[in-house]
Image (cartoon, rainbow, N blue to C red; front, top):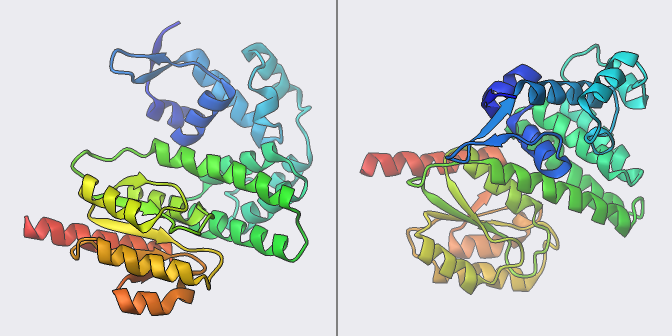
Length: 315
């Protein structure tokens, strides 16, 4: 068995994104690529066939968690037998084989959450990551998905169990994307987190991914970080910017105080970005500190690109 194909080549041959390949490898042991002396993944022809067959089966509605341990022969039989017809396949066939819209993925993800089906939710997220661009995936699927789930939980349409299941799957999915991003050591550094009292970290994770996508090296601190810790991390890493996500609640006076404290502790040359559904509720703190209110991820990326441009000009 010769291992000679890079992950980029495998992605082209199978139609799977490198991120999906890594997730299937890490979580489901779908394939076990050879590692070179430089720790580079190299895949065999059999690995490529397995991944292609797994893609065909999951497109037909099979759960990756249920079929990843099948042998290649069993996968061939499964795909060729036509027994993989399911409700998922019917929905996909209705789309005439074209790339699905963000609205399609949003609704199918919500359906999976309502049924407490973690495998199906992960499947649709992985498919969305293959079909959609990164900005559309983040802004038109993941962000509204978590907002809708939060609203439905507060209105009693979903239970705490539903919210926790969705949070666990989406957190793992976003973490996987962030880990797969690779930026040069010389890239400018951004600190991403939420202020103390803010436990919802999805906005901060999405901001971290958005920043990494435009060439920033991100240090992600997780949620609920005190101002002193954020400022210390910024000083130690020589960060060029700090990004906070504020989701819920949008009227906690302690959060406003933390924003003001953080701005006082940061070097005046470090811009402070604040975004998320609840950010506008802290307008007084934003006005007092001069922090930048981020309206969406595209706006955030354009601001970061402006910093990079000014940095290159000054050098």
